[in-house]
Length: 269
Image: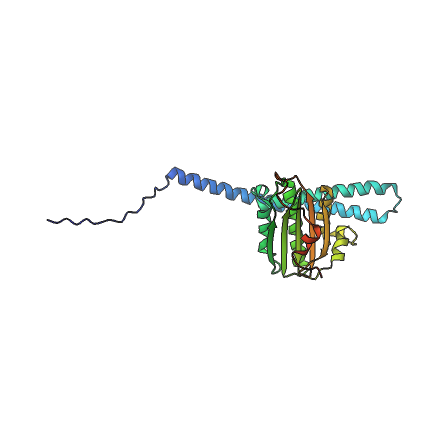
């Protein structure tokens, strides 16, 4: 008698999770969902409560300053109060952004944070690209968050005010410095942006371009250089230079030229 061997295809048997494991997974999912819901709730309360109240306080201070003569002895105290409310507003906005980004946002690398902006702005179609050059430096959470806010505000400004269709974010690491530049092809005027960054545009403190004034104040507090130029794309290029700790090797990357960063590889017309 001849016996024919038949090969039976083998299928790996995957162990099914136990009832305890399934319960643990559902519990973890429920906790994450509850935490996300709570973050959004806190973000709404922060936006609709303290942020609006501090903003109103800043506007009231501006109105009082406008009514006082420049040599008034009260003016100096009001200017200090204005600086304090501005600082409080920036911290509140950072906290709001952290709540919206979730618990993992603070640990993300800057390049990963910037990639979130590639989705563009929902209010207007915007093609956003990201270029990263040089050897990455170790940045503190405060520096990462501040640079991200600069990029986010510039992308928003390009989409809403500049009516741009394209924006290029360039992150460049050099020796002891990181440069962040956002260029667009919109209709904005560099001289207007420079005036806003210097706080010289009437009404800036009343909400007009408040975000740009906010990043200008943040850059000043951190000792950064912030400038606005005509971009090679035809719109505006806003560049922030942030001195940071030096990399392990002095040959890690070349020193950054502020002019070359703002050009994005094109000629500034």
